[in-house]
Length: 382
Image (cartoon, rainbow, N blue to C red; front, side, top):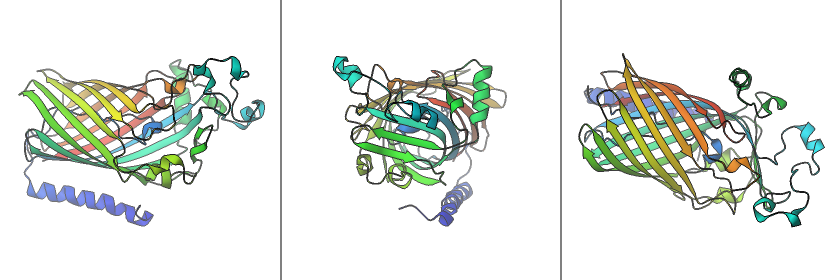
């Protein structure tokens, strides 16, 4: 159950109180911080229903150490399926008002036929998603780390549309016809063209609870100071916010999801050298209830990241590639992989405090990917 709007600040107050108490009872450790990647996971909001991979170090903290983090991100996205309607002008031009594909179903191969007219799906995300995460980690043993994440999300029309269109024009990146649509206006829908709407949202929201996530990370092998290998499993619960509280369509099939219906496995490797630290990961989310009958039952993730010290700060570059949750189709770009590049700067302190800031850009520049994301993270290790 979501707290009332006037009670939501209490969550931040409780989190801040926990931070202050930990600071009072634990002495800062000058070597407390693990040289980790910035934990910015997939930004595509269509994936938010499931437990997702997020980058982290395979290196453990020391037993008894505790880490708390608050992070905030804003992601702008203008993405649509080929047969989605976007503006009133297009709806009037297209023969059914929604779908424009496939005049002769009988003469088409199966890979085309399923996503025509009353088949397949239609999707549109035009807006911004604001997310706040509250994270806790505890190293109970050298080989075992426990983690917990509380996520909140807000859906808005945003303020970045004009900036992104100008940026794309300057860098010769296609705007994918986003200039046809109203700027800074929220419009989201996800349709199963056989059964009806799964999700729709046109009214902006305040922050709502998205989900909670718990995780266990096990150290498999280490060469102290140089190489680390770890395995992590995580799953989320209390995750009805996205599909019930934010959804303007009541009682959709996907809203029947239960706690721990999906989980994520990730294999992590970290290499530490004198002048840099590298991270590589492979991960897979296993799904019990996909969006559509032909959707995949898993999401694959491939990650590589590197960090360099530069004066008082660290510079981080990361690349995350992950598969789509949409069914495969020869006509539909929504099923293509996402490939997100993250560039960030970290300011660490000797007291165990660190601040990360940066941005994410999908370098595939397709019509099914995010346009731009910015983030800020503040973490403390004791």
